[in-house]
Length: 251
Image (tube, rainbow, N blue to C red; front, top):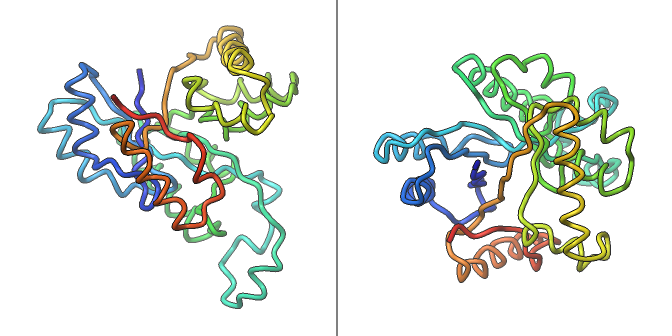
């Protein structure tokens, strides 16, 4: 079981060392660290891994954009003028998980982080598929959460796109029902059984194309009672999803 622990600034409230210690206590042999667009948790995670004798899988949850959007000159740099920023066309991105399986992969991950900030930053550090492919050596690419393009395609019933995307990823992710229950509240999925059916479809795609289907979670807080603090954190940023159950607690 992979525990994807998002510890990016202003996104989660779990100290990396406490997350690693908890995973070790539960008997996990490894834990994946997947900050949003950055790698800031690595130093603390490394120290905690050494101390608790647990393997740290270094990774990142990136923001994927299409190659067509990559060619847009607006992505090359942030405009200094507020009016220019507000007039830009909204750029859609999807989540994507990138894990390093060796030192080559870690170096390539650092390159992707640099490119995403220096060349393609637009409100968020973004990555195009062609750029990921260029530096894919040593990396494991996962389909990510409900904001990943595969989950979206499956949810929209786009069979051809779902098959094409399943072939691209090294592993496909499914998540606990509670993690995606807000989709029911929004009317995008009928009920919990509908969420389970989406997981089954992703699992079947993995089986069809010999891709592992991995049970993951977005762990943003350690204990259930801590959820309110993350909601406050997101509300302070005027995050539109602050009132949703978007995290899965450890315990």
